[in-house]
Length: 444
Image (cartoon, rainbow, N blue to C red; front, side):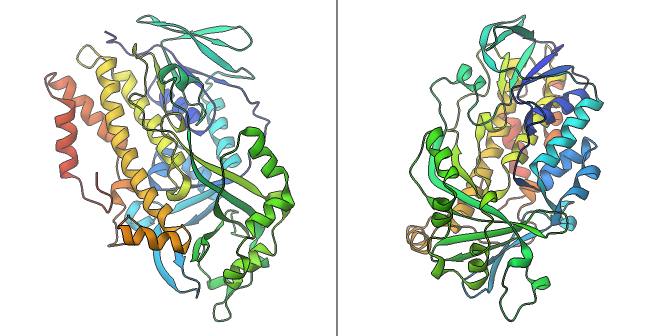
């Protein structure tokens, strides 16, 4: 039974979750090493939404002040029908209710700041190495290999290597990501090229916006600091492809544009103007894959752990993919240095996984509601007839369960309860806590 904190943690993957884990471990006094295949000079495209639960973590780590100035700050995404009437709103942030506005920021800008902080903290990073397999694992630690034949050791290895995780194959070799049947097609265009409804001034048109119609939802979201560049996109049903097939779909720019423009005549003018001004070189695709629910996020000997997309890839609709990865990293870092005889590693990781899985499950339910709202009209009508959940906003603050939760405080409260009274049952503790929490629209 492992009853002492790790002396060194190895992190496979220098993406958002891996870098955040390293910075969070350093904050807790736990040394770590990062191993990453891609060189830091490789540019990353696209932007992402960060909601208050993620921004609170980045603020605690001393990064928010640097980040919010580099992106587009906003609070709601408006839902509009074909006639351009606002039918609902979804809060991705709210300074008064949730402490922060939402932030849309280029992924490269976020990575650059995380890498700069890792360098500032003198956390060792080895680039250009590809993780191969676990050689051995026991109570003394884990030995692992890279494809170049070299080996390394650590007390604990954490796989933050994404949805197609190699580390996950060691924990759950039978699990493979499952394709949802939908692919997002997006582009980046200039807001000034859009044609707005005649009764609305361009500066007064709300963005981000999701416009719903016969074809589903068309989303436009500013992503530059001044909002001049806008991500525009929709989703399409498309058969699953292998890597070569997805690459071929992306490479055929004219064919991809034609797919993007399907149903053009059914969109309102503002969407048509977006489809008329697509810069071909900015076209991108995002096949929606999910990771089936895993029985465990760690190996039988507890020395190998996965987190982020490796453990629970979440579609981007609710803007929680990266945010939940941040939460995984932040809470795991709070837990590991507090391993003791009263709270051995096995018990701590079991409870951590329960806590994180319950929260991820609620986020997935929320994401399903939002995804259902984005389906083509005929599909939405079928879902409505079947009583399937579709997002509708309610009272102010209904997303407090997601945005206001202090996940580190929850972990520390669990640790305190366990180390104070070793007979306390983790499941009873968690059930008791959840019964006192403010209910939201998504049931636990």
